[in-house]
Image (cartoon, rainbow, N blue to C red):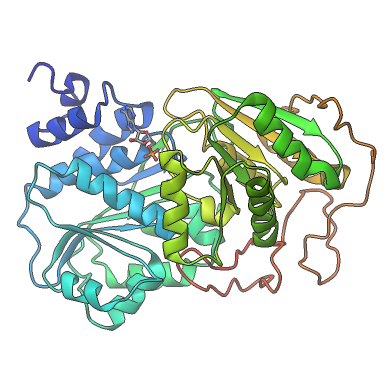
Length: 434
Ligand code: AMP
């Protein structure tokens, strides 16, 4: 087996999987894979603190496929392994990984999410699926239409569980759980572990092995972070200037609002810097096109809202820019997790106006360090203190004291408490922390 991903072989994976790993060009397992693969192969439930970029997808997919290949394959609407993800993009990416890692096995895998026609999905599912990747809303819809049966599920994976709760999927998840057999192996991945996630995990996992890819709520050490203080009004100019003067070729920019994302992308385009916006109001087709243009290099700047950017997997993304700071401090960690992936160093820049100082304090408290600051000549802030941003979406200001950015989604009309979901990646967000 020399040459066939030898470091993976010692973890207990067999030849078809080692061949697939070698074909992906992986030389050695990432830390989360080192921990997760043997635990899953040994049949344990797993609860892992791991964000995108740690190699978590291979961490759960490889051993799951290894176990599935030995059992009777799925027939007649049966689903053997169910992977739930919060967004369509992440579902598509996980499904791509399942296909890539399973290419030398004869297991059947599929992916279902909202925003596309359900009928072809129903036809496919009726044949049985060894690994089904799904967003919770569409899965429930399809189950109600009796497209598949979930009472034979051997594996359940909740990927980015914190996001699923944030996006109001908890009711769908609980309904799905009620349809699964009690005897199964369950793996839960989450970037952060709030008390809500821990509550969910308690009823879900049986004596889980607990793993951690990076220290909880700490940003990856390979991401160089920098803050440019500036005025709110000069942010678009500053962003154009940074991209030009540094000659950045692939930049993911985060905007707090969909409208802001559109405006920034239009502005960049006008400046001759190719850009696309990606957010919940864009059709699935437009999102997929924007993402593939960005991956291929045709689109130099992708301007995204937090939800749309969730789960975007781009190899070695060199630059992330926070055009606005996120409303919720944990999102900062998620955002900059897009860069500096799998050991590569990355670069995360935040443009911060006086109105965002409270949000900044909450982020610095969370990551445990002040962010290094450097004003850009010509863009020094003229406004040094200002009232905090109104993050309530026009329904009156919410105080930001004490936690920074809590309790409000910043989206017009977003529910404050109930988290009604518009399903599968475009749902309103819910925060129910203290
Ligand atoms: P994930 O955290 O699962 O989203 O994976 C992040 C990226 O790391 C993906 O592009 C994977 O293809 C890549 N990756 C996963 N495992 C390895 C590995 N062992 N060596 C190199 N790259 C990897």
